[in-house]
Image (tube, rainbow, N blue to C red; front, side, top):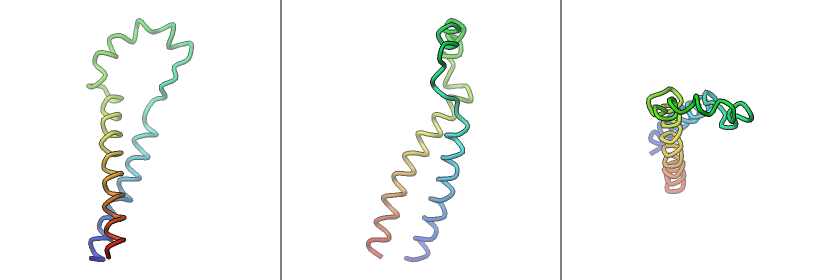
Length: 82
């Protein structure tokens, strides 16, 4: 049982580092005044956002957040019922 806890903790730690890196790589959502002026130029990129790097980073963030929550619950249950 202790080996399983150690393995889950290692995966949890790697996931935490990966989630931090993915969040830091993303652009900020607040474009400010430049976003209001250049809004027409963003329409093409807005349609193809899922294919862009920004879309992939958002997808990785969602998946990483779900895995983080699931592993948090699993780890707490493993430690509680050890």
